[in-house]
Length: 438
Ligand code: UGA
Image (cartoon, rainbow, N blue to C red; front, side, top):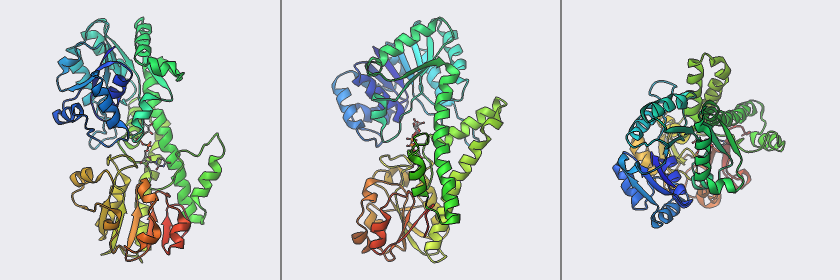
């Protein structure tokens, strides 16, 4: 099948390569020429394990190419919309200008019978509005909403082996045609027995924002427990293990620490609240404001903990920050708790050096005021304290004995509850973590 994918960021680029891998003829379209050039040269414009291999194999098959010209999407019969929906500046609401521009540009190339498939995360109600625009301009063209649940760091696996397929279909005779077309696109995934949820636009849109809100709530729940653990001397890690054995609760997403960041959870819960307000249902989601607050408080608490461990003052203290990305196996620094805390430490007078295996270039561009180092050893040279802010494997596996020779003071702040506390304490380190006793 001939497919176009509009928007070649994390979502679109991985989706385009994955669709080619599934046997389709795919063109990825993006307005950024340097991005399409890199992709055509089999270079990933972002860090994503397994993506460059997938990209190379899809390009070599001859079934994948990238272009800046929407006219190249003319032959496609299914058009995926994979552009970003960032938070509006100074507001909670999502900025839909890229989705609207993508659909607008597709109107030039759509033929009757073509299917536009939205994958971007949008406020509920968007799909119905866009469907009217599509069928109003190109009678016979259809729209479906098919949210994406991929996690950065696992994007390839999550795209080729999703845990469910959600189809939001039009409330018309087109629904069967649209469904059959999507089943054909995802034939291999459907054949693998992947659960399908076939529904209306509004439910499909809400599945995505509800899922991310639930995940954010789960993280903030355990971080709220961490606050209580700090007040009582209890241990949040053991608490999470113990409640997580109950499979109604589950241990996943109960890792207390610096909380959630990235380009999805923070902006999605805010956009969801904004949309609920527009719909007159804001009370239903006021708890998400608290979820957001708990999350942001963790960053402030970490700065306090750093001050405590540095004998009450950060002024002139050297602090090494290990990790800039919002999570490991990613170079994404959008709303990264790590960089936010690093900047706060610096504002309080600390001499901060940040390192990260993948996100330093992005960090330098966005946070030029911070100092960077290539390795943890370089970052921690003569440090008064070390903060592990992103749980990269290479930081989890640091040898506390050897690393102890680099620093001035053996004080470690485990911002992600990721280190082997016993090993670090045995090596003579003062170990502090959020939600755990001193
Ligand atoms: C998230 C969702 O997990 C995906 O299902 C969704 O498709 C994606 O957003 C999206 O909307 O596109 P992602 O942003 O890649 O994926 O990252 P997560 O793995 O969800 O982590 C988000 C943040 O929560 C990270 O900063 C992570 O460090 C933090 N986190 C996660 C915790 O603090 N504790 C945990 O137990 C788990």
